[in-house]
Image (cartoon, rainbow, N blue to C red):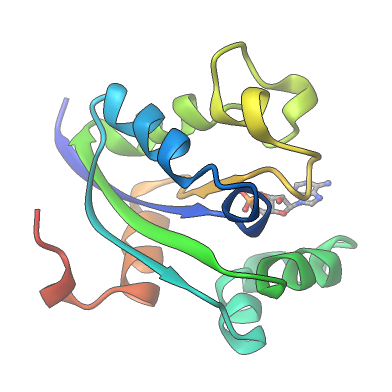
Length: 140
Ligand code: CMP
């Protein structure tokens, strides 16, 4: 397995409930190291651009509103096979389908307010990291 970097968001529903530490611990315990991490309040333009791939989906408007309602934590996770591992630690998008012990099973409120986002492939990981971080901020 190769050392990879992936992009992760701790979403507003989780930040509001003071779950940053518990969620970062789940990643660290799985061998994923946050090499860059910051708390930001996304603008509407940032959220719409980030989720542009979903703009025709019926949930797009609600998704954007949820993502800009209050601050998020954006981070870059590094580790062996980080892209797939991150998705395993997060669990299924819909918490009703998420496996025991995953972040979404433990913390998500609904399919929309599902506590975390993670890149789904190497290309999206590279794009999403670049969307929020400069090279200088990656201090792995
Ligand atoms: P995320 O991994 O951030 O990618 C897109 C987000 O859209 C997803 O998590 C959910 O928060 C949200 N969403 C809301 N409804 C749906 C749905 N029916 N299917 C997929 N994603 C949804």
